[in-house]
Length: 139
Picture 1: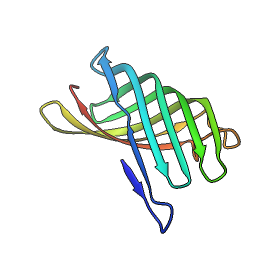
Picture 2 (picture 1 turned 120 degrees about the horizontal axis):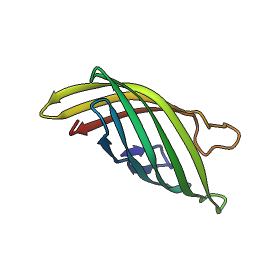
Picture 3 (picture 1 turned 90 degrees about the horizontal axis):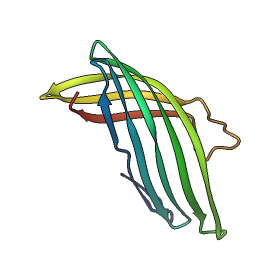
Picture 4 (picture 1 turned 90 degrees about the vertical axis):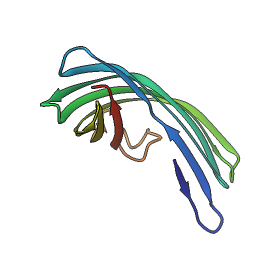
């Protein structure tokens, strides 16, 4: 969740990105990821929904490499110029990270991914790089 501000552009952004996975083996996980975000300010509003599969391979239970495909569906509105835009965009993220066990099948996950399909001329995203942070239960 985020808030942005300024003298006339105060805004709010709320987002959630859950993932549910299944351990196929002790070191390999597959699952489904989704996401929803909503943003609104005086000059701009947006809504985005995403869904797709992911896979992670765990190395010595502390490190992982992974991939995730997401299809994004979005609607944006520029309130100043009264222009609306809707569309979709595919993303294929590849990356790695670290898992820290904090007890009772609970982990903190820190990592980074890069969208190998990112095209700065066509994308609604400002970058192909995505840091991630999460809480994992059940590994």
